[in-house]
Length: 194
Length: 174
Image (cartoon, rainbow over all chains, first blue to last red; front, side):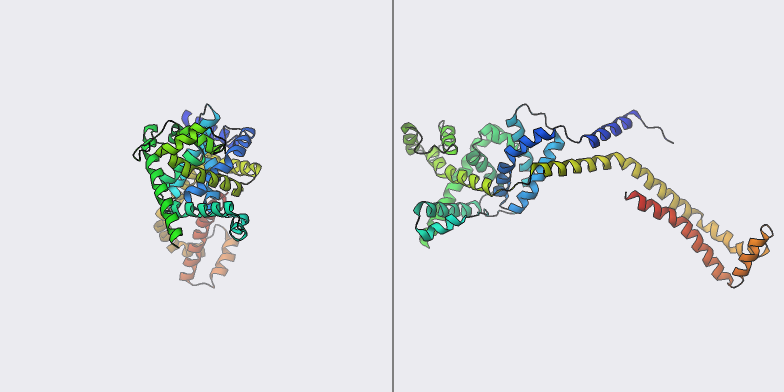
């Protein structure tokens, strides 16, 4: 029988350890991290992809890849950016075509039109406009705008989450914001005409 | 003064923070409100950010992430399964190689086997090494003609080769 080389023994030992304790992060730390990030991560994937079912699938995949990669993060913020970077890569891999937002308009929002509650009706209308405008944006624009204005991330954080240079973010975000503003005005104009 | 080609404004982070904290516009100081009125970038941000922030809040309410315990258990089980597969992959490769060698060897000696089998039934009739067995076998074989005997022997050899292969395939699935 062939003798095992040292590297093979080392690899088998590493695999055995991996089978015993598969992740560097322990369960307690993961719990805290998951509780903090699961909802924003789902929101991000759902709105970037425009597909809630796919967001459900990709959230778990993102956590799995994050845990497997065991990034050496100094702070919680780094850890969160790394997770969003994994999610962004998954979104890129699963991006099919631009889709509108799957806006779940709540009953209050729909009923407001009937009840005459102006604020809620206006809010519902604005969300519909956003849904229509969002459908015309590219995946990259959606990611940038969501991270900048829904999360409130700084340019440096957006760059870390998307794997881009911080210097590029300024121009890309400017263009994406211009596009969305124009599309929103178009959507409003279309509604006004009808 | 508004400049449409202006790309950024130093007060944008302040405005975004106020919007996300829910302080915009009433909870902000007058200077910021006045600035938004004068700055093209901030005016656009003030138009877009509240919408996206509202959508973020709605999406977070809408999200129903599975319980963390179940997720952890699933991810851990998947990682263990993959680690186990990685660890046993060399063994599976070796087993596969061994099976391929057996099949190759069997195919290699098949012509020789068939040649021997051609005379084997005659040897069986004349055999004096194991008279009792030979008697039983020859009486059984007496009912078969020459071609059927050859077919039966080929069948036996094939089964003898296929059983280990089938066992290997069944066990390797585990």
